Amino acid sequence: MNNPTTKQQVVGRFAPTPSGRMHAGNLFSALMAWLSVRSSGGRLVLRIEDLDPRAQDRHTAQVLMDDLEWLGLTWDEGPYYQSERGDIYLDALGRLRQEGLTYPCFCTRAELHAATAPHASDGTYIYQGTCRNLTPEEVAERLKRRPPATRLRVPMPADPHSSYSFVDKVYGLQSEVLASECGDFLVQRSDGVIAYQLAVVVDDGLMGVTEVVRGHDLLGSSARQMYLQDLLGFPHPAYAHVPLLIAPDGRRLSKRDADLDLGALKERFRRPEAIIGRLASLVGMAEPGEEVSADRLVGRFSWEAVAAHRGDIVASEEFLTK
Ligand code: GLU
Image (cartoon, rainbow, N blue to C red):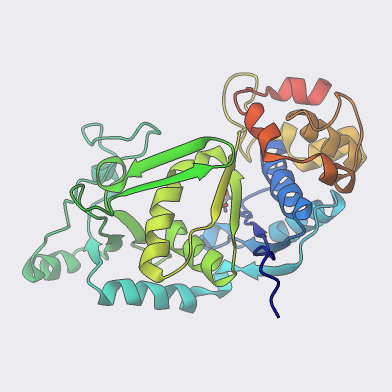
C-alpha cells in the first residue's frame, strides 16, 4: 500500500550547452542544482543541450562531463543529447501546429531587433505580431522569398490565462503577462532548429523533472515554459534561479572568460575541494578559504541561504583570492 506521507521524489537536472568549458558561474549553478537534489534524496538527469549545430561538438560535451565528475557532481540518468531527439520535438511542434497555435514568421533579424521595436527590461524584443494574421496568399507569396521561422501564439491580455505567476525559490514571487512582456515567441528557427523553449519543456516534461535550477538570466523564460507545459500537458516544475557571477568590470561571466573557466581554475586550485569550497562560501555554506567536498556540503544546503545571498554581486577577483 502507498504510504500517504510519501512525497513525490525530486527530479533535478543539469542541462548544459556544450559551447565551451564551464566557468565559475556555470559551476555555481550546477553545484546548487546538485545540492538541492542530493539534500532531498532525489534524482539528477544530465541533458546535453546541443540543439544548435554550433554546439554539437562531442569532445566539448565529454570535457564537460569529465569536469562535473572531477568535482564530484554526479548524476543518475543520462546523458541525453538533444541533437538526437529531433523527432520528439517535431512531434510536439506538430501538435501545437494542429491546434492552430503556431504561425510562420518571415521577419528578419534586423526587423526584430530594430531600435524602434519595443524591448523588454532584459533587452529582448517584444514581438508585435507582424506575421500573426497573414492571409494564406500573403504566406504563399513570402514563402517564395525565404523559409519562415515558427511562432507560438500567446494568450491575449484579456484572457484569464494570459498571466503566469510562480514563487521562485531564490527570487520569490514572479509574474509575467506574456502578451505585453514577450509576445508570440519562437518555437522553431527559420533554419529548422527547434527553439530552446520548446525543447526544454518537452525534455523536462518527458524526463519527469520536478525542479529546475539554473542561472538568473533564464528567469524570464519560465513564464513561456509554463505556458508551453500547459499546452503540452506537462506539470509545472518548481523553479530556482541562482545569481550570476559578475566579473570585476561588471560584465557577467561568459564562456569567453577563459580566466575563470574550469581549466584555469583547476590549474590554479588543483583540488576539487578548493573550488567547491570557494563556490559554497559565496552563499555562506563554507568558510572563506575552507576546502570541502560537494558530498560534505549536502547537510549544509538550504534554498533560504541562497536567497539570503542573492543580492551579492560576486566579483571574480574576490572568488579567486578569498
Ligand atoms: N542550456 C542552458 C544553458 O546552458 C540551460 C537551460 C536551462 O537550464 O533551462 O545555459
